[in-house]
Image (tube, rainbow, N blue to C red; front, side):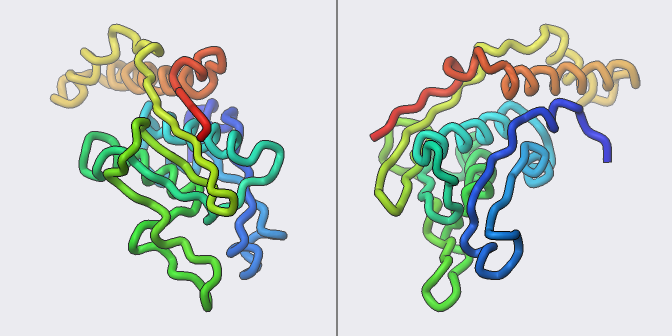
Length: 202
């Protein structure tokens, strides 16, 4: 399997998963979720997937500090309904990372390790996403705007030609390169992170 090198340069998110610990899935329940894992889940790498990954990473970093974040113990609230724009994609990535299921989530084992009813849409919040650490009921509000990371001016015309089947092999490759280059800048351009993601603690 081949993919852009920068996927492996994105810092993985480290978590403690009590369910994995209980069932012996990972030694001592410790695991890492990478950007590549999220690309596999979504089926593509794009600014939306990158933004969801960064929001999850920055949100739990603010909630947990130097403590290993606990998977399945963070509630995820989305301002918009699931069908609006890229809300569903964003929620899928964040809920995957944090082990936060909706009404169809894992119901637990004899009252333990439940993952259901941790993901909500249409929440009355001012930000795009709110994450709440359930053991101490502390929340962070996050919003994402990648507009300052500009795409190459050739990218959209090449996308149009590719979608219409009019692009040459070289043009298709150029489009893919330019598309992923923007995603790389979003993920690895650390100077821009404070500008593309706003985060406040409640």
